[in-house]
Length: 450
Image 1: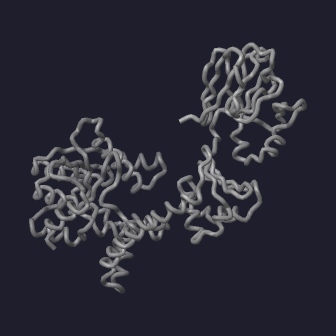
Image 2 (image 1 turned 120 degrees about the horizontal axis):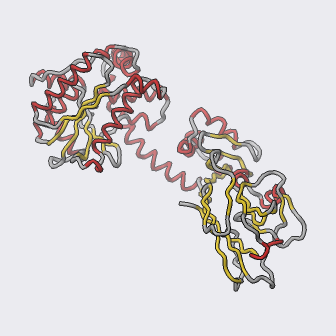
Image 3 (image 1 turned 180 degrees about the vertical axis):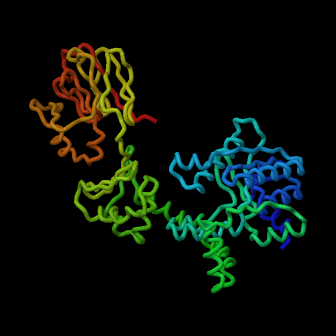
């Protein structure tokens, strides 16, 4: 393989970067990143080098750092280095060493290429290659990450801080051959031999065993990755079309029609894709599917949201477990922000007309005494709905209005001296309405906060 030519073509094909760009290369000192440096140098790119010392292998880690620093000097490239207390970070955050190291290095890389630093970097360039991609796809397959996981590592990712991977076309053996041809020295990481790390186990054990049965397994997997990537593009387009037909946004809620869902092909896959962004996991799919056949009121929670069966709908709504439940409204207050809403308070002379909008309450100011209390409704609450001269419990009022459980949970009331004057966004109390004798108006309006 003409590695240099393929490298240049791959960058051009995927529009990764241009010769005018100043690149930040993530360099460990291994053969992959060393070859990447040489390829960038020969192609005429301007680059600096960033190296992470995870302090996990004692003198060996320090030796890697010294080697990479010398490499940067040889290329007359800028050099950035960071030491990490990786084991301590992993323990404090209850992470594996691998995950901790990944978080630490990418957070640090992001801090360097952040435009706010004033440094010239637009791209972080990593040395992920074809074998890394194969390992990633196999790990994702066994972990059960779905079709997206089978597309593997992409040549470019990130929005604000772009990460590019110009070696995904090359196999490890191609990199070693290039290093041999050009007499490039590099460091060997002894931890790569330990199968206690998942990726090493796949690299050292699983893939070699598979190749004994299927000698062209790696070539076939690389071809599959391309096909999976193309298939995923079509998959995303189909899902987008399905979502437009099945998901209806109502305020802060998402409503899914049960009858249409039951007629949808590949129901489990569709349900997973429609609910995963709300924190629901593949393990909850069975429960979500059962909601399609359950009575109203049944629900399933993720860590952030609830899916509720309400008549002929599944309703997805955010959980508000940490919201403050009570707010005091004083006479001079003009605005109160609560939950996902803003309550505006204004005082005016008698209105020329009554506003027909449930999000606005016009009350006879002479009947109102401050402070008012804004709170969530609770069982046992009652009021006198506008137009009625007898009280009604809010629970009965909600049933008459056919409110869902989530709509009930998100209902707030404005209270004065233990009397509810307004069920916010729904109905005022008849005792505080405007009359022919009204000379001043208290106006409360409810809007969704952005």
